[in-house]
Length: 79
Image (cartoon, rainbow, N blue to C red):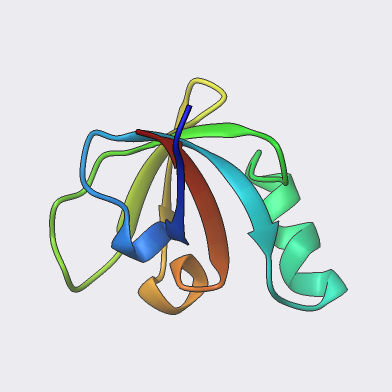
């Protein structure tokens, strides 16, 4: 299987991925954890806009993240 790693903001819409890494301090990671986003979780990007919030589906919930936040989340996609 071929894996591709990129940031959440660069993930194509309607693609499923898993969170590989989160770059940020403990407060940032704690905030994401409270939304259900953590290393190893599966997500689906819903938004198709290149600017504005990044909408993802995680653990059955829809979550909106700022673009700056999404750039700090590395995901891996099975190609």
